[in-house]
Length: 111
Image (tube, rainbow, N blue to C red):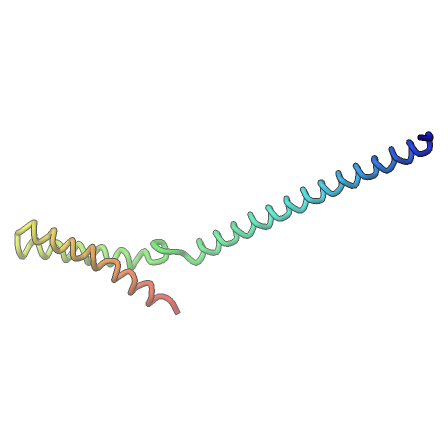
């Protein structure tokens, strides 16, 4: 091979290596941008959920009212019957009925 061909080949290989390095750097920058956007999106969603409230925090008063009502029912059952078995039975009924009440509250709060 002549010296000119060797130089041309070396130049082509150097340019190919530079292009490969530039493409890898571009892919890395694009991945970093996507990761930043995803983190920003997740943070935005988390902030929006916190601002609008979710679950217990949003319905704190309703949950408190339900808990107070349940305690009043249990206390009334105990005062009237003086039987811990009746109180436990009532508590069991309340535990079964609580999910129904929660579903009613959730469905009612949606527009």
